[in-house]
Length: 217
Image (cartoon, rainbow, N blue to C red; front, side):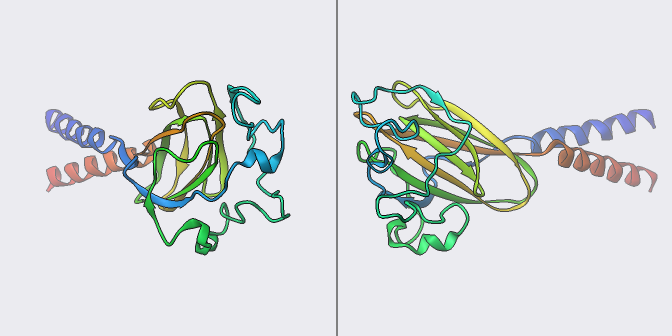
């Protein structure tokens, strides 16, 4: 009986470990909503903006992490530059976002900014992690909540920045604002999801219980 229980438990943990592997949700081939009509936001926000520096060499090449999101409510004509893209997906009907999801280019016009929205589905609660390489800077929101911002020296490198959160099952949105102030642009992304440990533990216990019930039968 003890050996059988150990075999059942071992089988459950083996399946359990297999389920725990990361699933790639977003990569450079994933389509998304794309807005490349923002232009140079340093011209909108003025000299000295830490979030949108003027082109190199005017304000150098900052190396900074941003705990707070840039203020996107201002534009030269008094209207929000990106409208309500973080909280209202009907803004995607605006012509500046194109007609639907499209391939996201890994390079864009220097020294402009571009915005991206990836829509994705999770079948269960998961730890969602994003790895990004970017030249020059990146700001990220998940479901409208600001989660990360940074810019650094040098070109884009895969896995240059990592951030993430825990998400439940359902539809979610990764929203990115790509910043550039240099002589070139570059971008790479990989986003993965791993089921939460609590979810996996319940699955393991369920498998174990199923095995025991069959043994009793």
